[in-house]
Length: 392
Image (tube, rainbow, N blue to C red; front, top):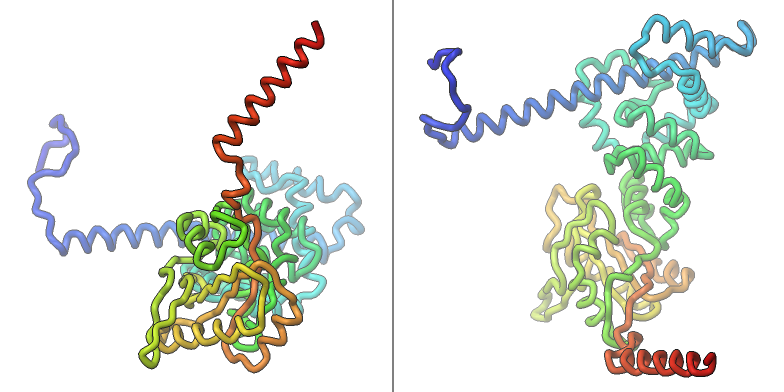
């Protein structure tokens, strides 16, 4: 053992690293990360429960009626005097606690019912089990939904300030849990009003998926995709050219599809009865835990498109889907659609699917050539010279 006072640089030396050592270090890292998560969740859950109870006290004790209109300010002064290092007891924050409790407390029965459907059980269950002592939280489960403990206080405040209904608030609570987003990103998401936009895509998810997965699928699939990053050669482009343009910008495509999409491949070949058929784009969604078959159409929706997509979804379920995968979802992306046509085409189909549109494809022919640009520059220069001559 080296002496404590002997000068030295810390470095790797005099050791033999084998497989057991690698596994041991990996296990230490995992345990430390787990401890960090447990500590963070424990602190957050206790803080939120405290805020919930204080908001409840202000409401149930009718504090302002009993002690006067300035009682909230007095409570703030008393608590800050006792806990000078805490930032939790500003007057504004106390009003937020009351507002938070009032928002949900008006209909706790509805809140409990909606939580079971709208919030991602698989996500928050894993997190909540990591909290060292959940017995105290479970005692208040009738009032304080456990998944709330997975969302920071600042997020809760902004969600309640923005939301008009419990359904909308729980949507953004669930979004925060699934995406792990910062407060600023949450603010932008709410400004984009994705709650009202989600679920507007024509689909049959509720008929062929569990309520929880149907809710998530409606959130995951967009009504319209902005393909402004892709360029085709001319206005009469076909599906193959559209697919090539998207595949050439695969990173941008995945960003547009949204979080959770993993690209499996294009023109995935399936041979049935000796005949080859190919899927345009195949994805796997990590959070939904299912394959998503994407068919592209460079024209408006036709009812027969649904039958072809249904075939491909069944093929993926039969050939690729594993026992622990959820049912495959079909997504048809076309240039336009009539919603009645889409809904009628879903009748008799037993696979989950939705139809979306796209826009903003760029056309190369719409851009001036180098020769045309040179001619325009010369014309402008000529016009400027003529204007200058007339002024003289």
